[in-house]
Figure 1 (cartoon, helix red, strand yellow):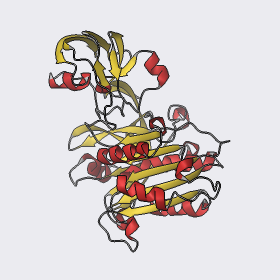
Figure 2 (cartoon, rainbow, N blue to C red):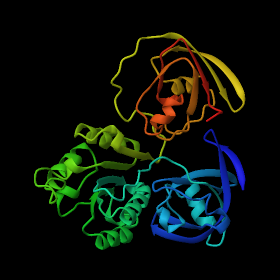
Figure 3 (tube, rainbow, N blue to C red):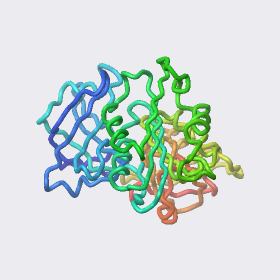
Figure 4 (cartoon, rainbow, N blue to C red):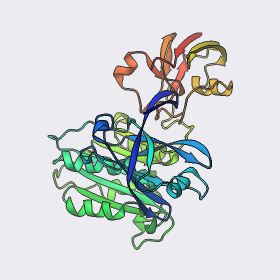
Length: 374
């Protein structure tokens, strides 16, 4: 086992053997890790979570996060990985590591999760683009296995048909569970026989989906399938998440039921800020981080705390700046902040004084934070 501070948190890594490596498409591959008996407990996970993999790339140590495609009942760690460029770290991972080799893999984490409800009738829809299918696949396998009454709809966008990742697996799941799972493929750079399936997944496309696919509900003649949607899962690039999350909210889905996972740094708010705050100038900020104490002044509270600390070159941990990843989680020890929308903290954690610096606006002249006791 190895320990390392990663994204501001103490992370435990363990050596795991690569049991299987498989090329999926021309720029994606999968890795399956064997979990030895003595580590089974450490590697228990929830559908939708990810692990971090530490490996050598061009002579340097790299840590990358990868979502699991496996479901918890499968008792293995399966990752789907995209190669963005021939000289990038994932390309090195694909070229340099084979079945039988060992890699350092972190214990699972992440909050792109759902509470399982095996006895309820639920409707869950998911939107994925490209490699964003990975945690959605974990969720869908898990739900199909554990929730006999839940029906699922997947809307999956790619540039072209040849780029669909896990197509055989997805299609076999749809055949096996034809009464509960429907999958619709969309292509942004390939003409389709039906114009409906051409183009990106965005607000306009969602409108069409609601009116043409999620309209008639066989189980309830009084309402539509869209009216019955309990949870929405979205995974892809930041702009896609922002567009679809807002469109779902606009069409009546509560924000607490819209869940998203981001695979890249994204610096914009997902939802527009709907509140206005009294201007406070010269905000004093004290904070503890990595065992050190810092003090600084922010010119005002027009911007969020994390963003202002980064401008001042403080090494505050962050990954997304959008309230999704939780890297900038800290304890508010003094003062008041307004915590805007976030996809990470629970109500219980907020009640304990936990905040995300990237989504917090100062409401008092002095703020005291602790990044070390999270």
